[in-house]
Length: 287
Image (cartoon, rainbow, N blue to C red; front, side, top):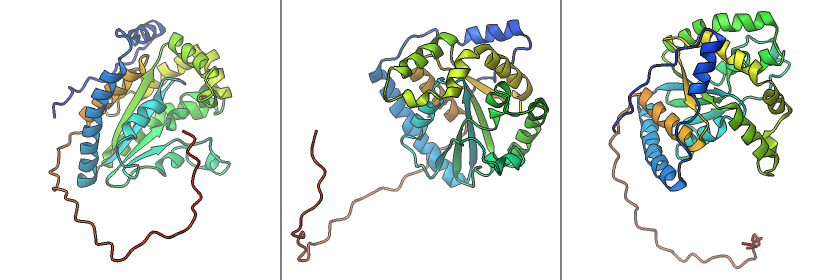
């Protein structure tokens, strides 16, 4: 396979001006991608993901992929396309609800680590421990002390995770304010997507700049050489999915393992079998 060259991890802006520049750079330079071209490229990437899956199992790798980003940035759609053609027993999806009363008394990272992979598994977090750096901080669901301790301790915890042999990959899907607004409005008028608009989503739309400041602080504290953040331009969903999957494949060296030839044997003889003479509860053929 021809690998995509690994990009250097994004250097975090240290002040508001440079942060705004970095955000502006995430605006798309290319328009929408036609479905036919998109599906053609996605099919190629799906083949490679299957090869990666076999390699992960063969080598007993443990992989954690974190997806973060603003509401409506396309995290769920990207994760769906990653998992579409691979085994759900190898590529596990974790999207935790709000913590229970018991979980609130645990060590903060405890509920997330309970879902970490064993050998031969890839775990994809649709939002992760970084909830504390985002929604919990902005919405006041944690104390200032808890927030500050999180930013201070997370790089050391992630370093320990990596030292234990786990491959940790962190993606931030960046979407512009205008595009988020467009997607929210589209959800309002679509009966298939209205469930995606929670009160928290509505509030995040109103607090765009509060979340921008939280993102910038999170990058500055946790975008390290050991565990960098990879920022995906997500203003065009199809391009974002292709770019993210291609980049993911470039981060985990793998080989195309030889596949044994598969042959279908001849079907057994009927040996007197007859279909039972009974009525079935058939589903009406409305379509």
